[in-house]
Image 1 (cartoon, rainbow, N blue to C red):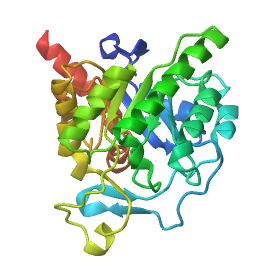
Image 2: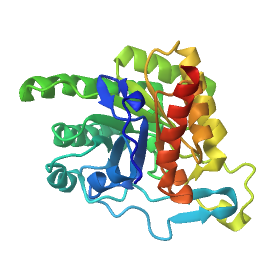
Image 3: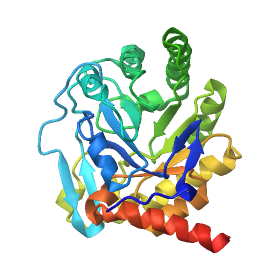
Length: 309
């Protein structure tokens, strides 16, 4: 019903063949309970998580707010999940779809020890996911975004790259692609640092972007818009596309980019692909527009392909 099977939609990115370029972003299937069922909506890949070593409840409720006039959501979930080892039990079943593993640190873990949390999750998921996403950009875990700073980020990614090589040898399987998920609120100088870090550490790509802490030009009630948390949805469309374009142009397309943020229509996707995204992901747009959005996006990509040939 929602799936379009067409070879022209296939993409090979960081050594993985995706049946189409439309994925479901992390946060929807936090505990790897629904990834196979979600593939029935036509997604080419599903990203689980964010997962942490230990289970945690996340922030107190209320922690998610719909801003309907803006077609947006503010969330301060706080990496609520049942822990990586619980997810691994469910990931052992046969996958009908490519699965990405989005990993983070527990709230109680100080930043100085954060690397250990990421390594625990990386080791636990290594056999069970197709690629990894290092989440250092959620605004809902205190201090987490400090790990985006140049030195701690480079150190974290180097250790994950080293562990990737070790795990691949131990388990006699290929290394897994490692991607970095970044915030939309980074300055141009910080984005240039990200480009340098990706090149130096030789990770496989970037996901641009996570939610924003900005609240400019919103139509919704000011009481709601002042809620603490990350804003997603339509207000993020232009900024996430601008970040994609900046990374693509300034790096001379040195690495793949998964574009996410404010995708509510096929036109939003085409803009992100034109800006330099290789794949895209949905979340808030999927909630507001419904599951037919995936099919409509894939249809629009095919129509463009047909128009060029």
